[in-house]
Amino acid sequence: MSQEERIHLKIPGSTSNLGPGFDSIGLAINRYLHVKLERSTDWSFHYIGFDESFPSGKENMVYQAIEYIEQKYGSGINAKPHTVTMESELPLERGLGSSAAAIVAAVEIADYTMDLGLSLDEKVHIATEFEGHADNVAASLYGGLVIASGLRELGTISNQVKDLEMVALIPTHKLKTTDSRSVLPDQLRYQEAVEASSVANVFVAAALQNNWEIAGKLMKYDRFHEPYRKHLVPDLAYVRNYATKYGAFGVALSGAGPTLIVFTGVGTSKELRLKLEEAFPMYRCEILLPAVGGVERSNCAFQNQ
Image (cartoon, rainbow, N blue to C red; front, side, top):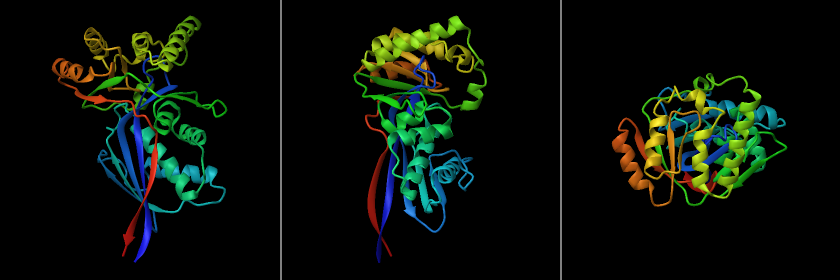
């Protein structure tokens, strides 16, 4: 009887953009992707809580990302095959960072199985190469609030969040990120870009100070993406008006949507959720909290007969 090691990864989901912080601001949330690794003779993947259409073979995004990292960063070292079991608390294609968490899982798996010794910033860079933008992957890796450019030489700014609770309004339908991105303009007029940048700058300053009252007000003044996506999520304006009437700081699309995130003060989310459930019964309303830490890796030994 030999003793083998099993690795457990706990990866927080995330909401991103938060209104004006398009493709650069993310916030880790207390909903997780759990991954278990066991040494094997070949790669195999098992999923719990995923859509039935999610590929279970080597054509899935997790294995593709591992292969990508192996080819680009492995220097001839092959990732040791494992049995991978993934259990997700994150609904797919709802704007809560499910794909980013899966990519972070791939980076962590590659780092472990190839003994790469990657730093957090290196992990963000690699995950961004695969994901295309840094906000969600950086939030899952660092935890808390992150501001990330995606440029390797600039790194990521992270900040712990205080005095904030959230209510997520999660619809039954999905919205692919590619579809949500297809409605965005190729460019903004100069004056529009200046206005969008000024709103984003003040938002970042307020969020880093944990002044969510100011940050929440600025969410509705985004110029980068919400004006172009609002027809895809027509309830955004109604939820925003309703929630702020009952004391919420602000409301924003979660990532590319279709989930809506209501930002509110500590101790107010339970009552607000009840009101939102009554007013918008077509949504599943869940209380979310900021995740303090990022991805966690733990070892646990088990007996193999």
